[in-house]
Image 1 (cartoon, rainbow, N blue to C red):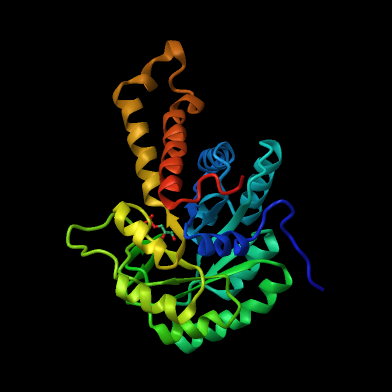
Image 2: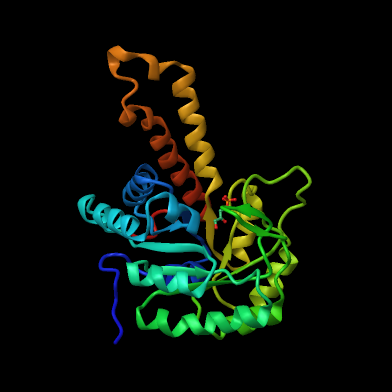
Length: 297
Ligand code: 13P
């Protein structure tokens, strides 16, 4: 018997489909803790912006497990009276079993990243996941090629996606497809030559569906806009929010505000506040660049 586990959360399908048709991209933001989640949800609500919040498997372990995350997110949606569309997404799920566990725990969207597997195995596993995901109204993201660099222990060589594979993957019923197009997780190194738009164009022609740009931190605005015009409908951001949080927290500490006992500058609610605000501001800047701000109006 099928069951929808996510009460107020929505899946990502409509969000990315609308974005694909309207030539903008939905922001996917990785979360690490309560402050991250609350900052993103508040900023999304204040700007009427649909949003995908995501956890890697590493973040799931860090935050204490799936029940903790689902409970926290659902609690915030209710208590902060969040009315914009919000999806809770598994980022770079390394196995179909993990994706199914997330669905059962209440995630509304999952990525199965089989890019480390031989392609036929990747495709077979995506097909295996689809029925379960459809039964629970959960959206699925798959990946071909690979994203360069390392994220939470997931390492990719940066192999470009293959159009034939993109076409096959599009027929599995997935809602969005990630592909290597010269993108890299983390800070872009000096030798980086930019996104491969020829590859993106070929892949989009082959699959004609919403595509996902991983490694969304630090890509120059003109390249982001061009990628969106060529079919990118979801952009994944992790490092950029971490850097914003780091810079704001560093400033607070360098100004020795944490050492001011008379104002209780050591209180974590004060210590984390500049970083919290920086996450909100960065969310607003990025979603304006992606063109998804205000799209929940
Ligand atoms: P960045 O850390 O480079 O923003 O990449 C995030 C990402 O792609 C998550 O899947």
